[in-house]
Amino acid sequence: MNTKAQEAAKGMGPADFGKLALALVVLAAGIAGFYYFADNQSVPSFVRVVGVIVAVAAALAIGSFTAPGRKLRGFIAESQFELRKVVWPSRDETLKTTGIIIVVVIILSLLMGLIDWLLKSIVLDWLLKLGH
Image (spheres, rainbow, N blue to C red):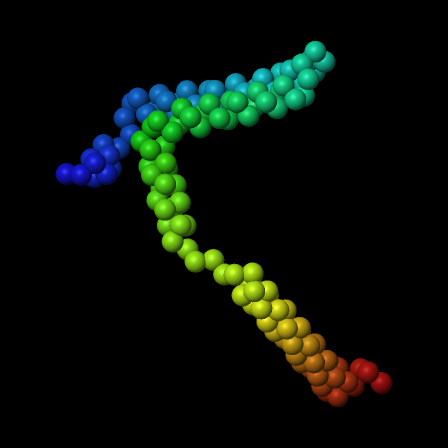
């Protein structure tokens, strides 16, 4: 049995639940500290924001050592590997494609405007005779 199959078979254990609970407590403490020190003039806003950022980073670090965290890290690593395979268009190709799209949008809007005008003329002016 390979390592990925063993990890999938394990699932989340009590230690993982404890780590996720700790991560939530750390995150909640960072957010609570931000609002708790809001009225205290001796604590600058910059320090409060840095405290929340540190709490979020700590919660993410703690959560990354759980089974779902390891799965997420593996997914991100595989995504980065796949992104290296992508062939991105050149600047010239991008500009040409954008120009074509703009021209098509203009033509379609003129066509839709013409259809709208024709339907208005036929229905309101000719069938219902409301234009005169």
